[in-house]
Length: 364
Image (cartoon, rainbow, N blue to C red):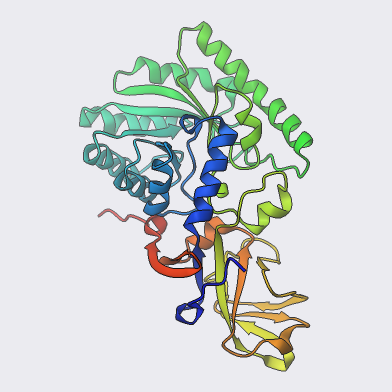
């Protein structure tokens, strides 16, 4: 039972336990799959922790991808050397971004853009600041969330290339709509949807525009993009892994490195009530939202803010106060619900790490 610390009685619940040795093993596997640390640009949204960034830096990973300004700041303070904010900058966020550019001049900071409107707002503030901003153009090749249709992206890219205040660095392609269970079907879908990106790159090269980097994919398509040497890879979940991907992407066998700890707080009518409410476990997914490591759950009776009530044939063997351990179905939003996590080394809780980038910045 690798997940059960010997000093279990000291654990406050609900909480998350991280296992650095397992995180390191996952990092090694990511590098091996990529064919080298230089090909990786891991997403930090999964963990949001500076110490996890440092574990990656120790293995030669220097590029990172973020979704929030808080994540960018966290990675910069942890020592990242090349950081991509893959999210549109609008409103006060533009000024906050330029402040980060000032604070970390030695770090290569880039941001995505996917529309003429967003580019216009960004460029006007950049022009007034006298700075030059690195840009990736966000491409929609099927996700339909952010991104521009690759068929029309060349006009936006041409506007960036012509502007001395802007530097075109490459394309960002997130294909989160691709998540078939079977690897062959996933690969066929990924390759098909990437054809439009290939055509865009060919068009840009014919016009003499250099595409320095293709920042591609997430976790399900990580091994697919890894087979193409010209692509940078952006997995996030493999650092900690979770029960959701273990079920749906079984061909990726990373180690669970984040465990949720909870306690039995009541036993109403022979059922189990745990302190694992949806303020500690991400609730956007259907049940089961957690996979218990030593407990066979029959049915979720109720899941509310601070409580999880289960129907369980094993209820009789547990007493009030017992600690239970589980893997979350979705680790990324679950991490954001916790200010700190316990760190377990050699089955001993030794310290806590702050989930620094779970916060938001509010300029006035």
